[in-house]
Length: 338
Image (cartoon, rainbow, N blue to C red; front, side, top):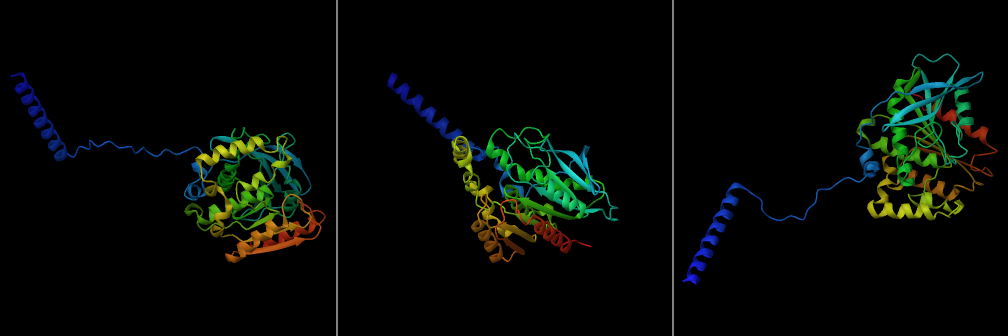
């Protein structure tokens, strides 16, 4: 008898379960088990070039803090600006000549690598910036985070590098907060690692809907043009630990990110600005072969590029510096918009 009661109980339980399942289907209830997890952005996803080209950068006030130096031709100011909530400092040179009705044309200047322990505001751009300012150009040179009077940079050395184009892009949309600057005539100057940052910026604005119509005619001095991360690993033999710490950080980065998403070599097609490139044959930091490979790739993509090679010139383009800056001025004037 107990066996019959057990059988009846299981029949009732089965019928109830079947009724619940049918009712769930009618009401559209999803009772399946899913192993899918919602995709969560990682901290440095936002620096992918594909992300940056779709990002709208907000203007923020560029503040002239104090005078750093004065010459007969220009006044050098320390400036600060907020980028992603952090303070970045740098140097602005204003010509002392009467500004044109539309304001002075401007050169955004991006320096190469300098050790933080010896760096002071303007180092790496001061001489060239002074020349351009004496010839009627406002110049602006960010120190970047961790340098000058800027806030500290990202504790992750890879993250600190990836943030640099964002600093430049934010500065570009903030230039209208300055007096006597012609924002229709902005140029770019990049030396060494600064040349790689400049190429990154040119790629992003060339494809961005928010920079539509922008052109930044750019002069590049011995630009680092190898793909990331080789572009930084190449220089680690001069480190005290021969790059051991950097390789560890980079290995961790590559576990979570595709490095090609952050490398200039895959996005040259996006560039829509004319380029002037200078390279010395005695440069021990940037190989002539690198620069000529860059020029060849740009020419194959039908980009507007002019290239000068200087026999015996070093990484700072000595002893032909005067020739280089004078050619830059010819280039700037050629590309001035009315």
